[in-house]
Length: 120
Image (cartoon, rainbow, N blue to C red; front, side, top):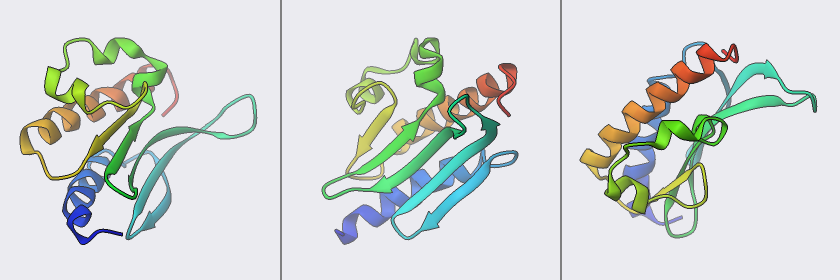
């Protein structure tokens, strides 16, 4: 794994750690930080909250609440939207303080949304 991806991974992991109270830590390794809820879905699996994972060329930040409630994405900056891959994934190659700050707010809003829906 490229050494230059450790800094963005560490920063993105901290965004998730800041919201981890009440969530279930599934994985915490040097290349993956993964949080579920304790809410069990009809298929018997826990509802995913989010993760940060080092991939081959970038770090992926997955945030499932924006998939469950797409309205959370209304008003995000063009810069953050440009980092989106699919409906609930953001990819980064370096630390981007402004975008990470916005992503921290989106992550907090996602947790609040899950609480409102009774998932946390």
